[in-house]
Length: 611
Image (cartoon, rainbow, N blue to C red; front, side):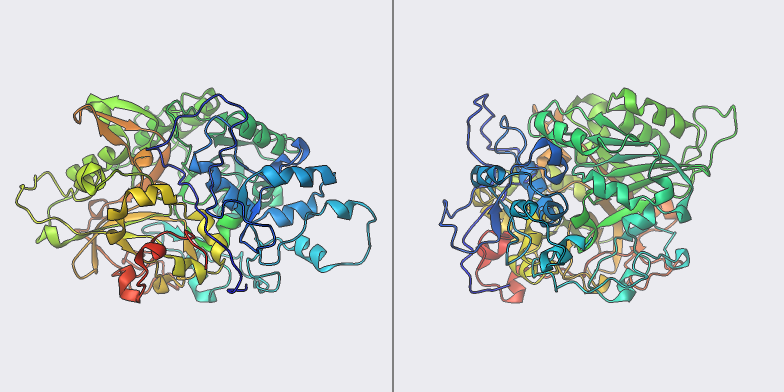
């Protein structure tokens, strides 16, 4: 990848950047894109990491999640999807040749998106003319099942034969928190990690049916991840797509009669269905996976992702009461309440099925967000007030509490106001600093909050290169309105898990001791740093408004008969007997400035300006 080329400036919208957005208008010809290149249409002769997005015919809808609804042109969620999908588009274009040159011309007006490599692969439409039997370098690229490398086809090494093999003995079944496998890192850092093929494999159960809750889907790829013997089993996809995007998703599924859909209701503007969960029903029982990965190829190879995998839940004896099979963390009733919030007939059978299983072995708490405006006791059911309630009821104050840091790590940033008191350092920090029922006095020193978010240098040196920034959306318009936020930022460094160069799509929040050896709590979730995900108080704090669906699990020491969690110093290779908690990145985090990054503002926003 030449560093001398002129790549120009670009910005990418946040998937949940709900504030300061002009409401959508019904004008159909609005050409305002959600991703605005600062280049303002520089000549095509300049090499860039972005290409104009190709419009596909209905026959090839499965190949893209391009900017979806003209009615919401400024929503960053579409930029997020386009960035993900375009990392794999060259492969898909090769396997599904374009039927006409006309479509190629149409792409000139479609906006900007990520290119998969420096030497951008030309559209395959001309290939449809005379088919040659010779195996060209481009055809070799199409046969490659891995996500295309930004550094060219020779960048990837062949995956070792045992990449998709998992030894159950090396998995930590105490916390049941796992990272995904990553290609291009030493083998020991994948020992005890999981790939989606592992999760869906027969070693965890004989699958009968499943439900996939997610934000981005590549249906043909998803089906391939199921083992051959399970590929015809019924699957429900829970999504938040509407209109054209929904039609494209349905088109993708036409070759797969086993797939049905459940559309999540999104009644509040700029909300998304961001939850990522699998419900797996086996002949032997039932299992829940709550994770951070989209169901697209690029999310499962060279990004840092996390998941919680439940134990195998056995079926309750016939005639058991409705309250049977509950855990000390109320996980069963909370999961049922979350599913019921969809108000979806498609999930009714699954709700009944879960009631028939014993979830009593669960040791984590469920924290979800569902769209709506909530008052009274309902305020504490969702979002950050749900987290506050659990921290208040199930934790205890610690000595020198104000010196225990709050850490937040995420992959997307929303609008939080003109200063920190509007949301972050007010209601959200109050939630994150809650320990027990004790109220902090007004004279208590402020707890330090550290935010971990990759810098431009992190992205540049990552396994994916600059295209990794497409999964780290933070719009320049939002960033320029909240410059105060940048003093909180710390870079991504994960030598402890071998993932310093695997950009994070995982989201974690925690309370850590001054010496970074103990945790008061730990949360892995789909929720990024935004009011849309966590909710924002309204009407003089008598109401909370949440825009999106999110889901995560909270680890509290009391559920493990511990006062705090010790931080694991040697996360990999994983051990089934370790009691240390496997924090996925290095502690303490390093502030941007500590790495000599003097051009602070430029280094705050991944891909704000590509050198």
